[in-house]
Length: 352
Image (cartoon, rainbow, N blue to C red):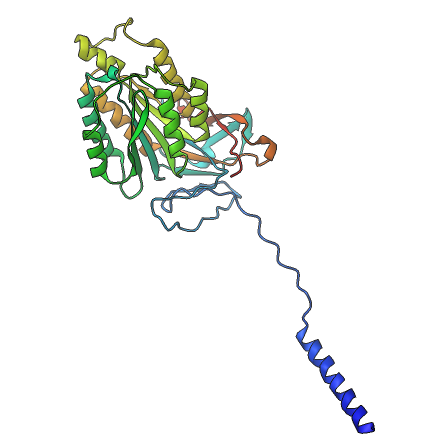
């Protein structure tokens, strides 16, 4: 009997020892680091960080044509010129000042123009632009060859008439772009330019990179369902910068043989509308009179894209602020006589 009791006591002692060896004290999980709000444009960008803000690079995407950007980022392309109109290319992040709704704001990052471009070229293909169409197509092909970097950039081609239509989806293949332009349908119908702008902005809004729209048009909208205000809002939400090659004077010069535009032929309302769209998005309007000036307009767009700074700004993430419009003002320090061109506002990104 005493032997049986001794065995039971021994087994209990062994069980207690084994249990104490298997059970570890519960460890509190390490707190996750606070994510840093950093947008990534391209692995080769020259990033000038804000003092005290450490960028956290995103993983390299599997698709080299897809550059991921933090969804909360508001990119602000900025062009700075001296008193003679020459681009100033040696500024640092400390040279810029950013105000949002009139209040000084922190600049998250400053990158240079090495960041990828996602460009949509909108060709007015209505019956009002038939005279100079062939030259415009040739100028666009030269523009593509000058501005597009196949290792980084993607371009899409839209035609705009009674309805807008994508003639070539985003591609880096120059041959496909040239084929799409050379086989462009004959000009016909009315002009739904504002509708086309909204469609292009939504299309570019699905990809990451510097989003640019170049319009080749007389700017005269005759049939769009969209309003001017709706169009500007769509462009601002999609972070699109708009450059416009306005063909009215070019067409009139071809038609009349006179280099100076006639006041009764110019669509003043269309001109004001195009100027406003470019100003609100940080772009510019050119009104060439002849072939040389048409080429120069495309050259200047190419140079502009190559010389830009891109300010990265991260809005207040408070949910009640999402969808709210805010004004943008960008200035530079210690550059007397300089001029700065940037978009005039943005809409606080909504959660996705």
